[in-house]
Length: 251
View 1 (cartoon, rainbow, N blue to C red):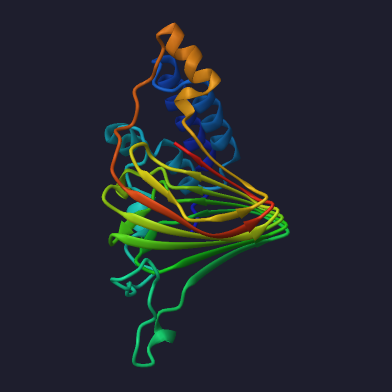
View 2: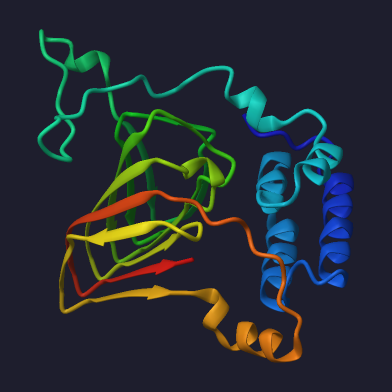
């Protein structure tokens, strides 16, 4: 459930926090501009909260004393499932109980959709975009377990997976990609290992370190490098096939 009461006032408070972070050189130009735009576009308190996902706890707790993440996490939407010990494929529970473990499916068809995922357990979650744009935000997500599966079907669409969450430490995620004329962007924390098992037919795969971009180099030259979020160890394996599509991993 999305909270909209108090949104304008909370938006102003958040922008003040971003202004302070920028003035103290804790956000570079690009991050500051992106986060202010995200704050202006936010449609709920929960969407505002994830904007400062990597800020110190004392700042987050002061701005959001009662965490919407904690409230959402009181119930787990996705029950655990079994993984084969001999492969990365998820196995279907036996004894005729498979219908007790339905996959979570979220669709964006001819529309733009933004989803905040509060909890993810060891069960597949499926995202499908057709002639649309889909942004899936895991920045404030609680990961229950160690091994997860995400399926992405994208046809003539753009899908963004934002996995910049320090709770990914020690986890493994299998991402299965399928689509045509699509663009998949995956934002991850620093320090992870990405294994590429995808088959991109007439497509392009790339990894981008934002620190090596134009703004990052300018800030380094000027001595204005901002404090970086601590690197963590995790693994992401990309699977699947895409025709005339692109996959970009950004960290």
